[in-house]
Amino acid sequence: MRHKLMWSFHRQYQLEGMTREEVEKLLGKGDDLQGSVEYKLADDWIGGWRVYHIDYKQDRVIRAKESWQDW
Image 1 (tube, helix red, strand yellow):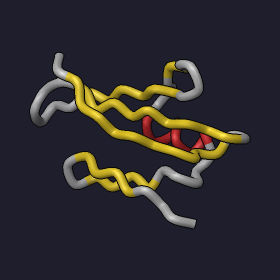
Image 2 (cartoon, rainbow, N blue to C red):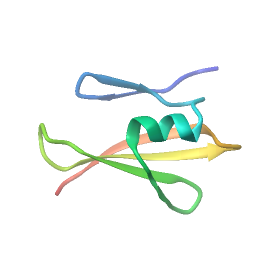
Image 3 (tube, rainbow, N blue to C red):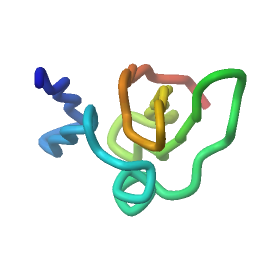
Image 4 (tube, helix red, strand yellow):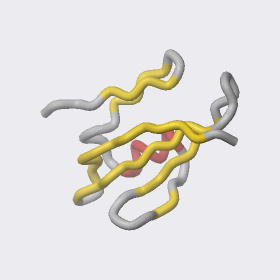
C-alpha cells in the first residue's frame, strides 16, 4: 500500500491507511464535511492554520490533502 507523507515543520504524519481514531489522536476532533473530514491545527511558526481534508472509507483514511489558511 502506498502511503502519503505530510510534513508540518519537521513533524511527519503518515495518514493513509490509518483509522479515524488514530488520526484524531494526532490531529484532534475534525469537522464533518460532504464526503470528508476537515482538521485545523494552529500554525504558530508562520501564523494561520494547517488544514487537513481527509477522506475515509470504512473508517480508514483513503485520501489526505494538506493546505494552509491565513488567519
